[in-house]
Length: 143
Image (cartoon, rainbow, N blue to C red; front, side):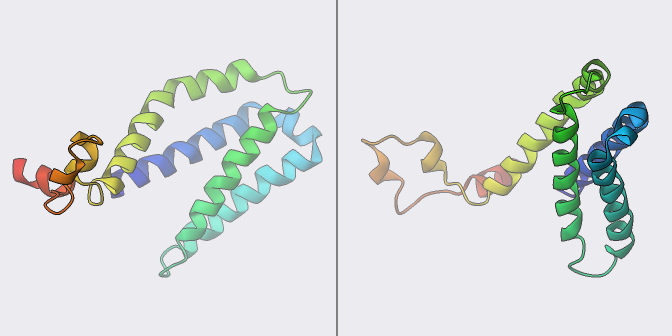
């Protein structure tokens, strides 16, 4: 799980930095976009330094959400024409983002989901109610 989080954080930070560098002239013309980008860079730097303190690392998640919002605002700006450049970079990493997202969601759900929730139906659900095997435990048998 740690690897997924590190890769996700690295990808969003690199994508954000590349987007800013490629579209710097357009972003600097628009005060609100410029403020959002600089604020995200500021928060990322501060919370990366402070993340050594326990329970401060959660603010990096808020910063990453602000990064996605800022990229969304940039893409939906009326005068923005750099879709091709940004789309090319997002297209290169899109499959990795989807794979890491799917694995991280599956990793969270496997300890909670029972085998009966995957293979049972409305007619034979009674077989799995009391003796349900958790998927995470079933996977541990194969290791």
